[in-house]
Image (cartoon, rainbow, N blue to C red):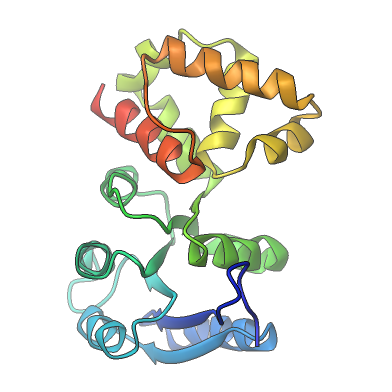
Length: 224
């Protein structure tokens, strides 16, 4: 069975009303040693199984019965309120910026928002599962771009240089400083200086824990 870096087994409750997709994700996870303790098709069942199993992670479709609008989001927010130690990885067919903002503005650790297309990028999807189960933040690059480039955000973002914007986008996806350096082919010190400049220009303060700084940046950008 797959363990995270704390040594505990990764167990998952999976919620999606599309049976074929749900079973495909279940098979993928189980092939990697992740324990799927429950697989359900709606928000109410999801809440019941999370309460029963208290898993490391819930993987949740944004749109589920009965209205196929935001039932998954509402269930996810309730999970983070009642069981903040349970990670939540939200899956969505399309970018829903307002829903992403609602989820990412929670203070509890272990938050992710991915487009369903990313599931086929198996290594990246499994990495997201591990990172959110371990309390990290994972945000789909398309969602990051939507949050950063919405018209109401342009005034704040316009203060950043192109390099700082690249660093901010990578940071918002949940990458560590070292991960940003490797992606952008920069030295670690250059990344650290860029992040310092970003926080100065956006007038952000707070600790340096990755999940908290990402949430702070996104919350700030959403409120501008």
